[in-house]
Image (cartoon, rainbow, N blue to C red; front, side, top):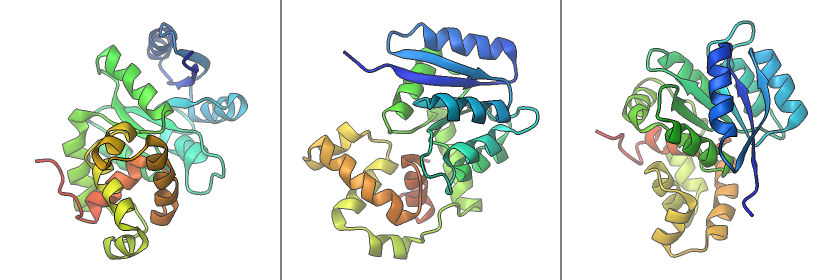
Amino acid sequence: MTPTIRVVVADDQPLVRMGLTTLLGAEPDIEVVGTASDGHEAVEVARRVRPDVVCMDVRMPGMDGIAATRELSGPGVADPIPVLVLTTFEIDEYLFGALEAGASGFQLKDAEPEVLVRAVRSVAAGNGTLDDSLTKRVLSEVVGRRRTQPVTAARGTDLLTARELDIVLLLAQGLSNDEIAQELVLEVSTVKSHLARILPKLGVRSRLQAAVWAYQSRLVEPPG
């Protein structure tokens, strides 16, 4: 039996919050265990119920979604809770801020229902997610304007073994653990073990940040 994915939904708009709760709760493997209408409440609820994923709106009153994400999954958090940031094209600065705050994924609010559900499952599985329509925009801007990762390309390639570097490059291309294992002829458990060592070496907290590090370091060229 597939384990239930426990989710907290945080959004200041009641209709959006209700819609997401209804959508996710209708899935047989997903249970919405809490909701929040602002960042402070999101942090409080998430710390209390320890969900597998927090679906986090960005623009909320009081503490916004970026600050709440940092509280739940930022660099100083010993036991981070994965956050899926829900956003729109018009708020690029929020995207970058959420990435720096430790978000595990980004998804557009107006995506098709099955895409949103798939994003939640991906983040819960530790794979992270980046909306396809955001990929080119986000990566181009991050590479051109920001250096959110503390490890440079030269330092990173010194720290990583050849196999670990192979995994990071495939990760940056959007491959899942299963796909990376198939590509490199490894067990999935071996890929997961490598990733557990790679993230702290690069000074990052998520697969998404590791992928962005690869683009920032020019080890992989942004799409397009």
